[in-house]
Length: 365
Ligand SMILES: [Fe+2]
Image (cartoon, rainbow, N blue to C red; front, side, top):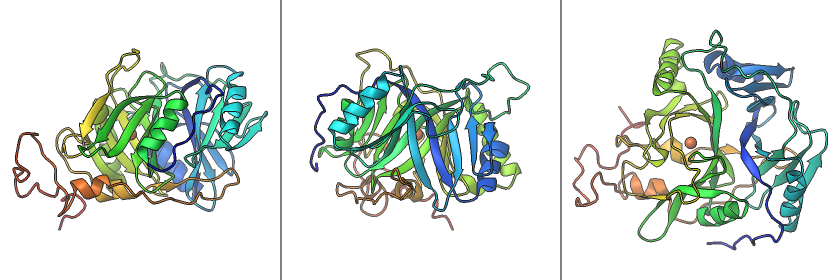
C-alpha cells in the first residue's frame, strides 16, 4: 500500500446516495441521441451547451448532465447529503485532508443549489449538495415508459490504483464495504461500497487511475435489459454493447455494459439485494473464480478491464493518471499466464481447453 490517507478528526458529511454524474461529451447531439432517443432518459432541461437528464422514478432535477466540452471526461461524481448543514461538514472534512475545496452557494449546475466540490485524496472530483429543484416523478406515467425504461441512478464505478487505500478512505467518509474480490496472497482487486441500502453507491476497481469506469442506471426487471439489447440491434447499434447481458456474481445483479458515443461506459443493472442491516455480511470473491464477474462463467472482454474515462480537476483539466502497481485482475485471470476455475476443488487445468484463458469474446475470428 502507498501512503495511507489519514482519518480526519472532523466527522464526514452524512451522504444519502449517489445522485448524478456530470459527463463532458464532445458531440452533444450524438450523446443526446444515445441517452434520450436510444436509452430513454427524460430531458428535464437543456440548452446549447448542456442536457439535464433524469430517470423515470427520480424527483430531483437530474441524474446525468451531458456538457459539451473538448475532452470526453467526468466533471463530477455528485452525492446528495441529508441536510444543508452537511455541506459545512464536507468542507471541514476535506479541508482537514488538504484537498482543494470550492463551495458555490448558487450551485454548479442548473437545478442544484448550494454545493461543495472537492478533489478528493484519490484524485476524483466529488460534489455534495442538499438543495435541489424537485420535478415530476414519472413513476406512474406509464404512457411515457419504454420497454427498456431506466428507473433510477444506481451507482458509480471508479478506477483507482490502490484499492485498499481507497477503501480505507471511503470508510472514513462513511461508506461500508458490501463485497470485494481478493486472492489468497492478499491482493484486493475491487471493492463495492454503499451508503444507501443496496450493494453500492460506488465501487473501487483496481487499475490506472483516477478514472471513471462506469455509471449505472437501474431497470425494474431483467426483461427491460433484454429490450434494450433488442432495440440496439434494431437500430444497428449492436457495437454499442461491450459486455453482457448477463448475471453478475458480485452483487447478484443482472447487467449490460454499453459504450456511449465518446466511449463513456454505462451499465444497465437490476435486482441486487438489500444491504441495510448493520451486520450485513461482506461477500469476498476469489479472483480466480470465473463466476465472480459473470455468474454464468462468460468471459470479461479485455476492453472492460483496461478502458475508462478521464476525470477532471475543478478547473476542467484532466487529472494525471497513476499506474497500478499491484497485480491486475486481467493478468491473473485472462490469457496465457492467468487461470480461473468453476469449482474450487478442481485442478488448475480442469477447465475445458476451449474455456482456458477465457478471452474468446473480443478475439473471435
Ligand atoms: Fe456496476
